[in-house]
Every structure is written in C-alpha cells, then in structure tokens.
Amino acid sequence: MNNIFDVIDYKFFQVFSGENRKIHAEIIMVISDYFKYNNTGNIEKEDLVNHLTEYINHRAFDYFLDDEGNDISKSSSREKALNKLNLFKRNGWLIEEKIENYVDIIQFDDNALIILKALEDISNNSAPKEYTGYIYVIDSLLRTFDYNQGVSLLERIYDNTETLMNRLRGLNSSIKKYLTRLLNEDSEDANKLLQMLLNEYQDNIINKAFSNLKLNDNPSKFKNQILSKLNEIGSNEGMKQLVQNYKTTKSSTMDDQEIEEVIYKQIDYVYGIIEGLQKNILTIDDKNSKYLNSSKSKLSFILSDSFDVEGKIDNILKLMKHQKKDEFYEDAFGLYKIGILDHESLYKPRVYKEPIITVKLQEKPNVDQKFVDRVNERLFKENIFSIQKINRYVGTLLEKQTVIKSSDLIFETSDDITRLILIQLYSHHDQMCYQTEALDSIVTTRDIEYKDFKIIKRGKEYVK
Image 1 (cartoon, rainbow, N blue to C red):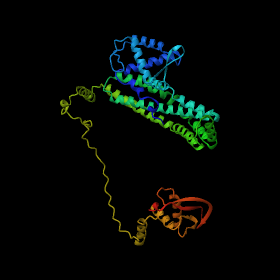
Image 2: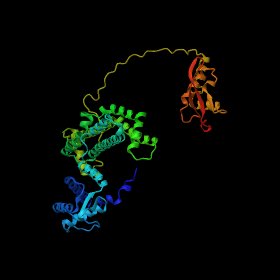
Image 3: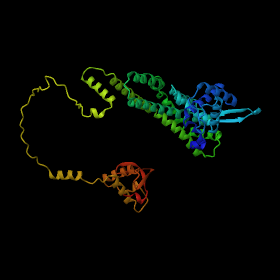
Image 4: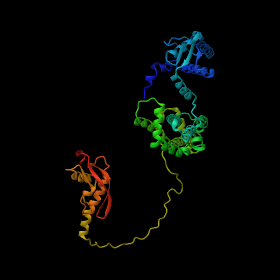
C-alpha cells in the first residue's frame, strides 16, 4: 500500500491549518457546491471568481488573512476571492488550464473530490440510514454472479463489505462518544439530557441504524446464502474461471498462484466479515444498552427530589459539588450505611435445640497392608505416558535409524498398545522429535486392527 504522501503533496492539507482554517473549509465547500449545481466538471475561472466574490461580500468574515498571515480584511471581496482561489491551486486542490480562445477553466483534482466527499459526510453527519443496503447489494451481486465479469464483481462485493464494516465501526465509535459525553457532562439540566437522549441520540443512532440492523431488516437473514455462494466461487472450478477472467481483464505479470492469492484474500475478507457480522451487531447493541442504562441512572439522579433523608442528603451533596470548597467540607461529617432501627431491632428469636445424640466410636478397622502398598504404588507411580516420556521413548527408537514402521515395534503388554496410540496422537506437537505419516496397509496386533504408519525422525534438537 502506498503512503498517502506518495500520492498527494504534503501542502495539500496545509489549507486546514492556521487561523483561517475555518474560512478555508467553508470556501472549498462553496466551490464544491458551485461545481455540483452547475452540473459540469469544468468551470470558467471568471465565473467562479464572480461567484466567490458575491459570497464573500454577503458573508462578511470577521478577519481575512493571506498566505503570509497578513490581514487583508480591508481588501475588496474580489481580491479576497482571488487570494483563496490561488491558495487552493497552489496546494493541489484545484487545477487551472487554458482552452480554446484563451479561456481559463478550473477543475478539481481527483484526490480532492474523494476527500471533499469524506469532509461533507463528517460535517453533515450523513451516515447511511439503511446499513442493510450494503449487505443487500452483496447478496444481489452473488446471486447473479457471472464468471465472465467475476473479478470486477468480486471487487464491488469487497468494496461494499469494507464500507459496511467501516460504517459499523463508526457507529460503534459514535455510541462510545455519546456515552463518554454523558458521563463527563457536568450539567444537571434534565431538559438538556433529554434533548441529547431523545433527539440527538435517537436521530443519529437509533433511527439511522437499529431500525434496520435489529428490527426491520436484520442482515443475518442474508448470511447463509452469501457464505454458500462464496464457498462456491472459491472452489477449484470457480477459482479457475476467476483466474482466467483476471488474465483477460487485467494487465498483470503475476502467475496463476499469485492471482489466486489476490482473489482468495478478497473472498476470505468478505467471508470473515459476513460470518462475524451478527457478533459485531450484538457488540454495538450491548454498547447501546450501556448508554441507555447510564442515561436512565443519571436522569433518575437529576430528578431525585424527595423530602426524605436520602433526598436531603442528595441535595446537600449537589450543593457541595457546586461550591467546590473541599477544605470547608473536609471534616464536616461522614456517611455510613446502616439498617433501619425500630422496636424489633433488639428482638432475639427463640431457637429450638435438638438433644445431642451420643455415638460410640468405631474400632479401628483391619487394613490389608498389601492392598495399601499396591494403591500407594499406583498413586505415586511415574507417568510413563506423559508427552515427555513418549518423546524420549521414540527418540531412543530412532537413535540409529531415521524411519521406522509402527508394525515393526514389539507389543508384549497393554502399555505397549497405549504407547503406540499416544505416539500417533502426540506426533503433531511442535516439540516432538518425530512426525508420523499414514500408510495404506492394515496391521493386526494382539487382536487390534489399525492402519500402519511411519515414524520419521525430525532432528536431534527435538529430543528432550
């Protein structure tokens, strides 16, 4: 991935630094709107200057600075318009060129258009109301998937999946911001809290997300058919067609394996996001519940206006909070949690006591010492089947040879059979001195039938 400054000049973002950054942000949006509503990619410079001049003339900014920080507030509106237009040209936002009849035209740089869209979304908080729109497009593209256009369709599916995930992350972050703002808000104005909860939060979070994600059109209903189709196009036959389509539509020097890796990476990304989508939605829902519970607790605290002891203490603490005189209240009083004291507090209920039953002590039972010794031996016997013991046992077998068949081992006791099973089970452990390889032949040993396998030495450094 290229660094952004390999594509965009570092001066590109300087327009949003300095004292005039808000003015620059406002003017570039004015220019963007002018292009948008004139429905053209090229605007004559003179027309744009006249439009900016008129806007600045009516806007009456408090102060206006040139590139060097000099105050040009007393300059004419046209001079201010030209100054800012030249600023955006020098920093790479706008491009000026001459066409026939020596007419100067202005157009936006392609990177500037991408960033403008992002800035517009942020400033207008224009997150989509229907998050399921993305999942619906993904499902539609997969249901009508055409391998003759497979690579371009897969790229669209990937882009929609990435956008959906970014939107969900943004939604998660938005709820966290509201929760942080709620907990850090020092105001005790119930109306202000209700305004934030019922208007801002309801409009920006609930209406734009949960009405679709949780109620009307839950994305989980598309999950199975999307995953099934992804498995189909990721199969050997599907991958062959995609690789062929990639070669036909893309000018690339990559071989088939490299192309497959690129395609598999896109399919795996989409598969992983769709498979974990419901989990992400539940995480967001959990955070939403925390916000609502915190709002409820804070609102209850603000509206607490009872005249009992608890309400009076509540009011006292509120006054102390606003007085901000810690040294005055430092030794004022202490708060303790106690139960309610009434006429029954010292009452001690009568308890029925059963008579004590005497039991004779049993005589010491006779114990078979041989039995005790056998139990003791079994309890404290060294574990001959631990992973370390099996590793050492195989290491001994492979001291003078690098490969041995399991059928070549000698089986005299049940321990030998157990050891054989564990050799196979432990072979996949990273620290074992051997590995196993299955054979096609069937072996019968001590009335036990199993598939033969090779025990292959991995290296002396593994023997422990």
